[in-house]
Length: 200
Image 1 (tube, rainbow, N blue to C red):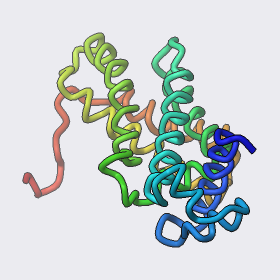
Image 2 (cartoon, helix red, strand yellow):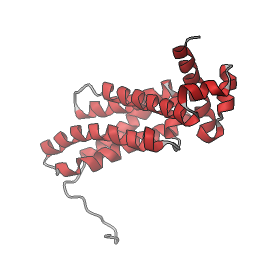
Image 3 (cartoon, one colour):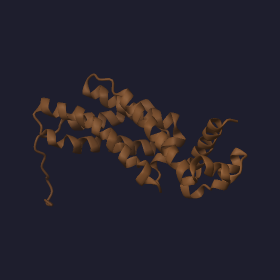
């Protein structure tokens, strides 16, 4: 096996183990044993468990971001919302292990980023779409980041729930997400107000 092939093998094994057991529950010994190599081989390629984990997380973050940005192909804003919801659900369905890794707390977050930072990156792209919609409807464009975070967060948290239950079917989940988001946005007040007693 070449060095590049060994590196990919270790990444695949690490990805599977990190998804099943988390960072803390996975050991270099276990990774090496599954690969049929000694621990020094893992250290040689990645410097240790943290280095392997960082590469796995980085790859998963890039894959998800590429899927979401690639799905936003333009069209009516509601269609863009559908495309984003489907992209995340497609990622969860196709890269289940990767999603499990991303939603866990990362012990090396400072170097690899976190699920929250990835969601923030996606929300930034949605923010541009919402900004132009807000302008067209006479809403304050400065609030687009807040609504982008809310929309993307709603889809991401629903995705975490759907990861385990897998019911209803993906298209139905996407339809319900879009229904809530779209009809919630459709009736958006320009100056929302609270109706309860609390004001702060």
